[in-house]
Length: 138
Image (cartoon, rainbow, N blue to C red):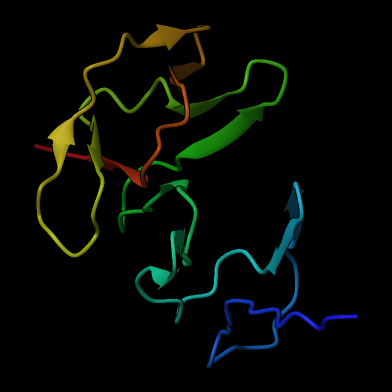
């Protein structure tokens, strides 16, 4: 009878945080549990041929400007899209977007604006990145 030595690669995450939310993803023989929206999750963790990137998933949200009309976001879960809407009476405001709140790169939204008479709106397919909206008076 012969004994064979078995060698396995070591994988470890040296730092972690206990937080709420999230879930578990499985595939094949692997399982990863995590929490969404950890603000302190950094760059990619690597080991062997594996890579795990933590942090926030993309978000679509509004930035309420002082004195500007109220912006509203509604999830259309069957499509999946979101609708950003504001009062039709806000005729002297322009809907702008920015993908990074640390910059001043606000630009007009290049999507068609719909109206039902009382409300103006645009419909957005969720991007693979963050997207922020605001109403600005030029």
